[in-house]
Image (tube, rainbow, N blue to C red; front, top):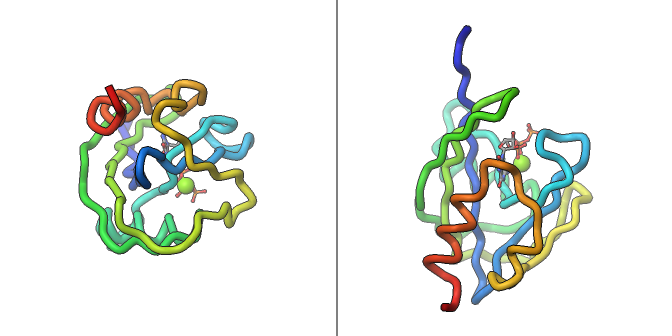
Length: 134
Ligand SMILES: Nc1nc2c([nH]c(=O)n2[C@@H]2O[C@H](COP(=O)(O)OP(=O)(O)OP(=O)(O)O)[C@@H](O)[C@H]2O)c(=O)[nH]1
Ligand SMILES: [Mg+2]
C-alpha cells in the first residue's frame, strides 16, 4: 500500500481578534464543518502561491503577505493530509463565499462554538494560546 499525503495550504486569516471561517459543503470530505480557507497545493506551486490562489478563488481576498506558521500531518481513515498552515494578517478585499459557502469572521472567544475537521484541534489550540485574550 502506498501512503499518499495530500499537501494542503491552509490560511488562518486574522483581523483584530477575529478569524475567517468558511463552511465546507456537505458533499465534500469533512463536509458540514467550519474550515480555514485553503486547498491543495498543485504541482509547480509554492505553498504561498497555492494559498494566495485558493483565498482568491474561495473567498475573494487578495493576500499582501503570509507567513508559514506550522505544519500538521493527520491520518483520516480515507486519506492523510499535510496541513501547511500560514498566518495571514495583511490582505485586501471583503471576504465573500465565491463558491456559495457561508463565510464568517468569528471572534477567537467564540471558536469553541464551531465544529471543525478532525485534524484541526492543534490549530485551534495554538490560535487561542498565541492570539486569544487570557
Ligand atoms: N481548506 C481546509 N482544508 C482542511 C482543513 N482541515 C482539514 O482537515 N482539511 C482537509 O484538507 C483537504 C483539502 O482541502 P480542500 O478540500 O479545501 O481542497 P481544495 O480547495 O483544493 O478542493 P478541491 O479538491 O475541490 O479542488 C480536505 O480533505 C480537507 O478535509 C481546513 O481547516 N481547511
Ligand atoms: Mg478548499
